[in-house]
Image 1 (cartoon, rainbow, N blue to C red):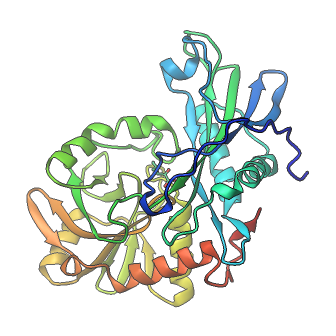
Image 2: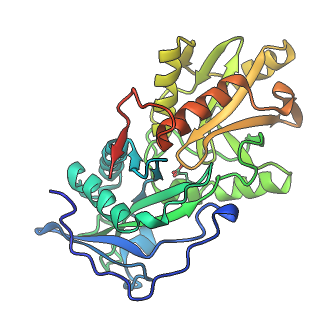
Image 3: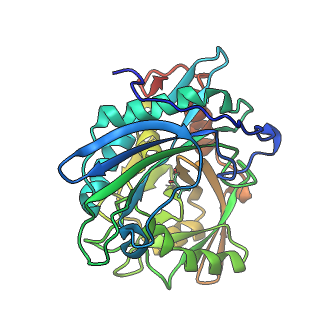
Length: 355
Ligand code: COI
């Protein structure tokens, strides 16, 4: 199957945004992909249509019980003009794991990747080429059966939209300031922490707003039981470099299994840098800071790529990391990862997929 979806082209193409001032998630391309699901019929009628608002019944399950999921990945144009995706098969697999948790029907993973490729192919001239920019791809599924009883929906829509983006953080690679959240929690064992569903993010807004009001860009979540172990950052996974060991929280059910996280671990292993997936207490981080052994911290994510952290605040104590500068490991990872994604660095990992 290669791009075997009917395409209805827009008759009213939009002006493209200025690549020099692109922000994250503000502009959207001319087309979107939609596919429906009905019990008994399965997923059907995949199609590409002009980007437009949706018409949904106000009783649709998604509005009341939040049965939905989303994903994020990016498309890039290489210097030679080739369009490529980064590990889309991983998004397809993660979608099905999330779907399982949210009682959303499974999607054929080849069909999923083909749908992404087909849409990116149609809107390929929207891929920005300036350093630090990309075409963000947002696949999502909503339960659209009109029904107010609490049970799984019998109807769904799988939709993909595209957004030309600049860096998630306005400052790009300028290190961010992160607040260690010790009041609210994101996830607990047995919850939806490892699923990519909107509810996790809705529940995070209050903490994020309170951190913003204190002057911090993001929060670092602690575990939901003891509020002791570091878990993840608001929109990304978290990595710490302490005494030459790179540490990230293990995937124990409460952490989002980031595709960038997985790529960072693989790249570090390839470089022979010590990387450990283990529980790390915030007290151990604070002690390492006092001992002068807290060398680096960075976030990893599709939107965030690699974002260095320059300050961490825990219970009013500020830890200034690497003098507030990006560290050598974060810089190298950014250069390698973004280089592979954009075709500037040879992809020896087999991660890029041509559209
Ligand atoms: C991504 O990195 O793609 C995400 O999904 C994070 C998003 C919540 C901005």
